[in-house]
Image (cartoon, rainbow, N blue to C red):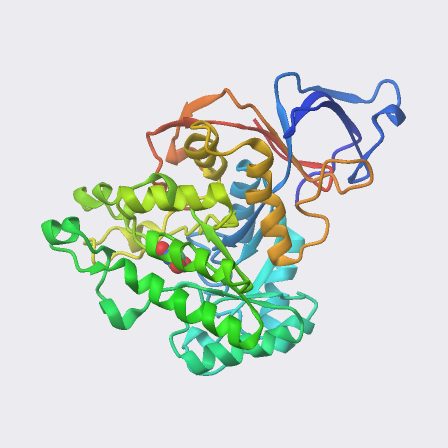
Length: 427
Ligand code: DOR
């Protein structure tokens, strides 16, 4: 969907490891800068960082079914604005991506309309109903080449079904990504973190243990089956503890944290502003500290945005009725810089690992999360580490406006994004 760009010589960029270099983009790949012809278009990147294009393991693009909230075109445009060159489109669309045909349909939409690569996440169970396995093998064998499966938005609650899903996908090295939330512990009305805040606000809460109980079960099922489990949006200290234990045991588990669970805390829901309603809910400061530490030390492997656009008519409701979810793609890098890099918790090479390399590895996406070296696909983002701005939700490339950072002063790092050598965003 992005207009073709000609060859481009980016001069004086700084790589994540601090090396200064020129980058020559030609025919969709990085080439030896010495081979750039005189007179080629140049971009002065003095003072800018060049990072591998970001990869999101967890995006809701809403197409098919809710094109009023987001489309593949608008969601991937937001992704490009955020420095992403690849997103994984979650299965909770209408219809659900639970067949090979549905997976191929979304993949084709991505090919045709995407401003970045769109990898399809298949549902674990038919219709996300948690009762019968979806066509896992057929989706894997389809043209969409699905490797990641998730009922995200819902938890696969049945232990036997989860065991079967893990066993099934092992045959083709697939991964089950679980939305870890024990619904039976809180009930369907839960809409914020169970804490003094839920009591004070009169909102039914999710205890942290609703998350960690499922993670504990699933890592043990991964051990039993020898399969791989990925934990979506870890938000609790208890969840981090279980993942740390599982990794120490050699269980094949990976985990992600969202930008919002790194930065935003429970007291934000005190105004009953439904922009801050999200699932899992925003947690209290001790949980934020735990997930930050886990992202720094690698217990949490990667950042996943859980970009969840919602139309106004789904958010303009009482807090307990509004749909959960918030935008994430455009400010993800800004938030990670603010919380992790700006505070000295994380260096740039580690940020690249957590926001590009690790998610590309999880999704088994060739050509993404690669070093910026000659011969590699030209997927990269130019970053101004010093720029800041006040976030303006109305300026979003997303079709939705449920941006929890609206009005916040944050880094404004993305100067330009290139996907397969084409400029998909430029400030
Ligand atoms: O808040 C959320 N919204 N959490 C999820 O897991 C799903 C998402 C959505 O699809 O809106």
